[in-house]
Image (cartoon, rainbow, N blue to C red; front, side, top):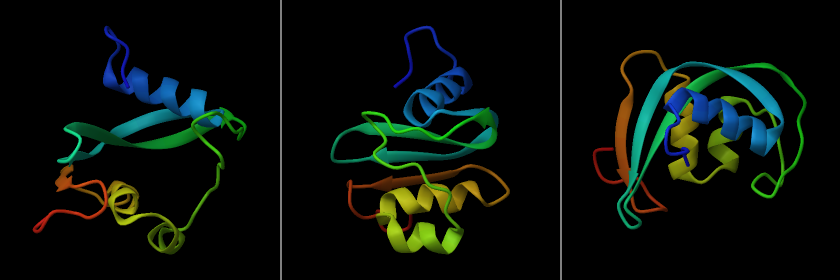
Length: 106
């Protein structure tokens, strides 16, 4: 969640570092995902690791580097699609889900 006066890119860098110990450079927005059951909109950015070291936090019980195949086999659909979308080029994807499954046409 962004701080009140925080730019999205600054929030990405802060959140990733706080939760994982990894410092990142933000490349670009890759997706907008709406959880229709909770009314939450998530912006997803593609980033590159710049430093730091992996660490656990209250919000990260594991920090791992996964291949695209591992992402789709190990993560829930609504989270895996965010990662796989971030690996694509082109315009950001816009999708909706109910917290478990992507909406039709998403």
